Length: 345
Image 1 (cartoon, helix red, strand yellow):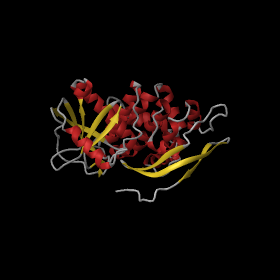
Image 2 (tube, rainbow, N blue to C red):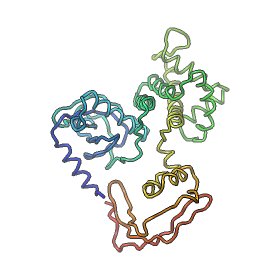
Image 3 (cartoon, one colour):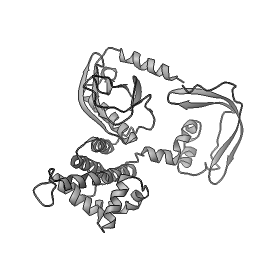
Image 4 (cartoon, rainbow, N blue to C red):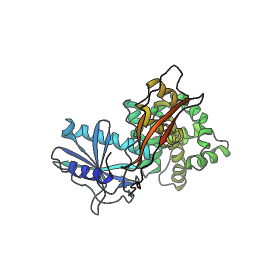
């Protein structure tokens, strides 16, 4: 396991490689790492470059490593940015491109959100082209500052998932309770306003949102100089954003990070390679592994605690028992802690 300093050194060494680089300069609300960092996605290694006084935070890809043209490399970077934007639910707007024999920095500074380290986990590397397009429109929608076009992009993401236009209004109305469950979200607050006035939400978002923004040759249409239209679109956009998330998750199976944490499926990751696929699938569905499936574990294993890129050993443990009930499968381990402090620096 690599310590955080090792991760930084690896990224710095990778940046010094000569080749055909493509660099995307960003304006983003994601907490961007303060130092160079590598992240793997879709079989590629992406170099995350921090912001500096005269440059934007950037994503760089060594296109020559993968035999990619400049256009192909830009597409790979955009797909990575869409996956990251989906996981973080934050703006990632690619505002400029650069490249060359080395990953030179581009643009000017506008982003102000930084972090020590950006988690490399739970990025949705989808292969379905419609799902990829939906994630791209979603990223565009939450990245645009203009509420009209932001709403329209989120509606496009939703419509790619829900293909039958005649079913869209009903589909939206059927998901109202799901949105209301998160009472603190902006989308839920806007939904309550609409429902309190007996509005058909699905029809409203189509006619007063999608159609009014996309067309100006028939009523109703929005006027960017009318403050009422601007304010209404600003309130409607978070609701459309949440509907796009639900549609992408339900139709394409691309889970939001909140769903991942709520389901606790990440806790299976450390065991999934030790278990038969049938057992893992059962437990992912909230069931115990079937009795006819043999569960075999090492009698001794090492427990590691992690924080960011740091890994610290908690000691070697001995397997005592495996129990299966109707609701779960459980392990009983005896752990002998090592007498040394974990390094959380």
